[in-house]
Length: 557
Image (cartoon, rainbow, N blue to C red; front, top):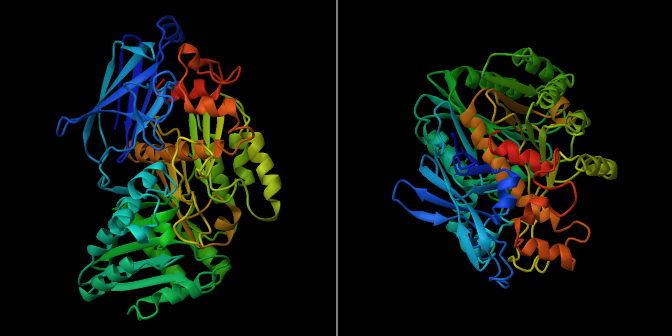
């Protein structure tokens, strides 16, 4: 849900996902400078019980709080936000909140709260009916985890840590499986199939009389999958996919009732410790018989365990690419395929963004997407990456990313965690929950095009935006058009993780922890000069700058 209000020259937009509310606002530079605005305080009121609280940050005024306790956030009532964008990450699904955005002037020791603007928004439910969207926490390396659990590994903490990290994702899959009873069928395909909770849910479904048939990767993950399954009573339910051209990389489960496919669970989440609780992942539950039937037919193609070429021929016949301007809300795309036409189609969608583009890249940016980012215009573009590149050409790929991110309208964040003593007012953070983690931070695979527009596009599934995922691997993707509620959820989650990792990566930049930059990170500016930014041309009102474009976009202009 989106809600906006404008009074006293201040415009505020709230975008409610299910666990995140994004807030953007705008006030003329003349009003900020002339009014001596030091920042903005934000108060949240929860309608359910009237609970009121001021949103918090970590920067403080040096004059009033020079030495805050490490890792302890401070109220924006006393230490206002010097930005035009913030988010509430403690929101709950299906709740109504009012956010009061207050310009703050005066001096750090004697702050004056000016005329406020209020905006009321109801967060989306996790279950939207046709769609249900889940994101795990995806940030074991976080200040909140460090505060809650003293940075202990999840096995040392117990269920509370796992529940917090799952954030409803594994519980959602258990609910999906829990629907299956006598006469029903669950047909699944998973790259990593190693989770005992899901084993138990599937065994319970079989005990209720459901048919259960799971394909698992029989190549790179075969030994680990079979070691995890050994002795679990899964005989007759599982089968390796051994003849894929690359990886049997899917992560989906189809529910059929009375011989008719009705629902599908898909997304990026491997059923492993790291997949569910460690690096960032999502799951997407679709209640649409036509979509589910597509997945059921795809499963039967995979179950035949044919080699790459006949599988690709069957995939293309099952999921031909939609023509440009297609009206269907949900399109399925299955791999492997014989050409890169699907990747080209995604790149075309990305290149057509009129206001904003958001993409995740787990293993570098494929060349086809570089032109969508490597341009200077008034479109804000965000890339969230696990790393800048992969393999033997890492240096060349990294150089491209470094060039792209110098564009004023392009912002890139690469996964990192805070190390002790790198930023002295933060707590040390974990970087992983299992030693053998191949991916530590960003594992999601999705693209958002103009998510705040009238026709948002969400592309999401198991496939990295890469040639291998298109030509070689078993993969599935959904293209969802025109669904604002789905787009709002994905946008909130993207910005949650983007903001999280952008700051952490910035601590690794050259000179980031030398005295002057370190002080900029620690303390608020005690005058309206905060709108000017740290360098010439990078201020919130410098035409074409990242901050100026973001100020306008996230305030709904």
